[in-house]
Amino acid sequence: MNAGGRYPGWRPGIELRDEWLALTREEIIDPDRQIVDPHHHLWVHGTKDNPAVYETERLLRDTSAGHNVVQTVYIECRSYWDVTAPDHLQSVAETANVARMASEMPQGGAQIAGVVAHVDLTLPTEKLDEALDAHERAGQGLLKGIRHSGARDDDRASLMIPGRGAKGQYSDPAFRRGLSHLGKRGLTYDTWHYHHQNRDFLDMVRAVPETTIILDHFGTPLGVGRFTGKHDEIFDLWQEDMADLADCPNLRAKLGGLAMPDNGFGFMDRSKPPGSDELLDQQGRWYRHMIAHFGPERCMFESNFPVDRVSVSYAILWNFFKKLAAELDAESQDLLFAGSARATYGLPPA
Image (tube, rainbow, N blue to C red; front, side):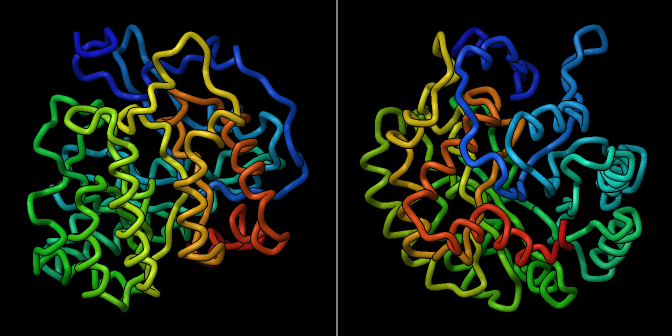
């Protein structure tokens, strides 16, 4: 067993925690506000006898919990791969399965309006194009971008969700060539990494100005392992990193993902989940800094569900976002909740 009594290989989503999440309830704020959730996953984890399923039925249960979520963007998470296919095409099955599930979603609720798939960007250009072409066919018009995350930390044992990034990935000429190729094809690039990788990421973003890049989860400020109890110290350095990154016009930012276990806020191990006021008090400074530097036109709120679901319910999370956004004018709120996501991913009107 690892910290917290969970078995080796535990991943968020195996414990869907419905009863625990129900312990904290709030009245929905501004229930008519239109929301585009630009970052969620679908998956089946666990075992045959004890599966943990978070697919469209579960997604719709969350998105219909009181907030007016009209569209979502699915982000790759190594679900549904076809391991019998050639290596560079195994992930195409993920796009195909999600596109099928999207087509079967009932009208009147949230609709999956975009897919960000996984492709190895270090592939030779011919193979890269073959993979991208296959994803576009499989996506049936939903493919918007690619995520080949760079998250890497050598202390994997302290992380509940260790990244798969390669050493030196952001500086790899082959990777940068592939990243540039995405821009030429009109595709975006999403990435997830840890806070200590922000300067390497900055060098990469500057080197590929022709591609729209989306930073997921604030660059994941860690709060476990050697970073336990160091949020204030990390925040000081992180502020400088984000201010420099904001100078890159091709960069966008997703605001969310701070309730992941490895952020170290400890919500998931408590007897009762947090409310929106507590989230605002503990995490508001990270959000305010991003909005101040990137501007609402380059920021979008994200749920990162079901990963963040281990710490907070969907209803509470979006209440927190609404309380935070209430500090801003109406146009800025519209951008943060829907406009920026639609513009970044080229989503159709709801």
